[in-house]
Length: 125
Image 1 (spheres, helix red, strand yellow):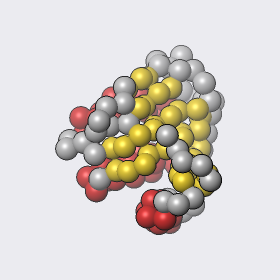
Image 2 (cartoon, helix red, strand yellow; image 1 turned 60 degrees about the horizontal axis):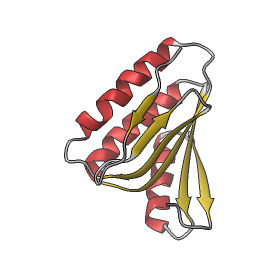
Image 3 (tube, one colour; image 1 turned 135 degrees about the horizontal axis):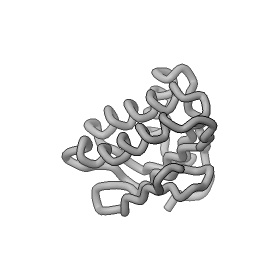
Image 4 (cartoon, rainbow, N blue to C red; image 1 turned 90 degrees about the vertical axis):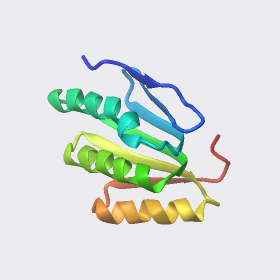
C-alpha cells in the first residue's frame, strides 16, 4: 500500500495531496527558489508508486503560476508519469489564463499529448 502524501501549501509552494483516492492533487503556486527540495519527497513517493502494479491515479495539476526553475521539475515529473500507462495527467486552468494555456500546450507537445487540458469558466481558488 502506498503511503499518503501531504505537503502543505505555503506562500511559495502548492498543496500536494494524495490519500488513497484516485486523484493526486497539486494546487496553488510554485515559485520556490529551490524546487529540488520541494520535489524530493514527491519523487521519492513516485519511486514507491513505480514499484506498485495496477495503481491507476489521475494527477490533477491546478497551478495558477510557476517559475521557470520549477517548470523543469514539473516537466520531469510529468515525463515520469507518462511512462507509466496507469497514470493520467490533467491540468486544470481558468479560461482567461491564456499564458498558462500556452505553456501547458507546449508541455503537451513535449509529452506527445500526455496531458488532458481541463479549461474551466470559473476562477480556480
